Image 1 (tube, rainbow, N blue to C red):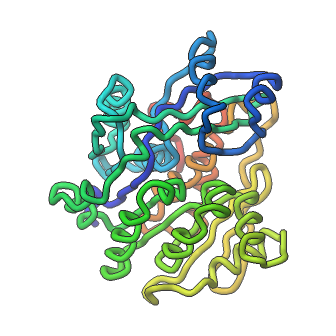
Image 2: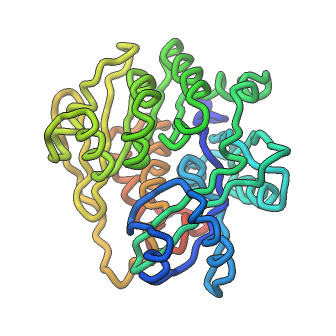
Length: 341
């Protein structure tokens, strides 16, 4: 099998500004623990405040980019992954390019002249992360960039696609284009629910893309929000996963599989009208450093096996392995080589 460029991701590239904060900081900026939101004006001063902290770290992030980096890390093939998104023409954009290149990902960024590279404040308290994304240039991605021959070539070369739900806020038109290409060419298209606010406020573009999704990823909070928004009157994650898997499909080539993570609780996988639970790797509380990127890493690990044609159980095991590695480190970072067997 040809692995060159087999997996393509599209999303919002953000430079993570990660620091340990206290409860007063969260209160000051009205931030809930373990949530992901878009920055409002009231949040803008927090980026400088966090940058001034002695523990601050800068890491190339953005949900999809994290997953693609982790997938590349776990794949034994150089150049297996590509990624598109929009950055600014500035030092953060250059930093991001270097970071992605070092990770072995073939990035084709759209460079916006008018806005700075997007940033994401990663507020870590007791190992739990809260994300506040200031999209800036990431918000400026244009479908015209995707249609350029050198970029569309990446779409044609890929056999698997992954896009976090956050990209629905930026370029649903680009998502649709890739989704339709995947369906027409028997390729695998996957997305993530990504955050409760996506399910609530971007319901229309999410529903438009859903029939094309062969894999739907998410966590228990997002799944319950999805259920509430669609009036399903159930909080049971297994039931919700099943209902999502049975949502009508645009193409009958592949069935839909729903994969919901639940932190330390088992991973829920719904396919073929049944649910399977997979235990995660237990981690003592004192080893937990930072949950930022845990869900992204899970998807990256999962996809690294999926593109190799491995069974779902192996994909889940690889996802659990990757997230277990990431939560023991600061930010979505990993050692030089994986030791996943």
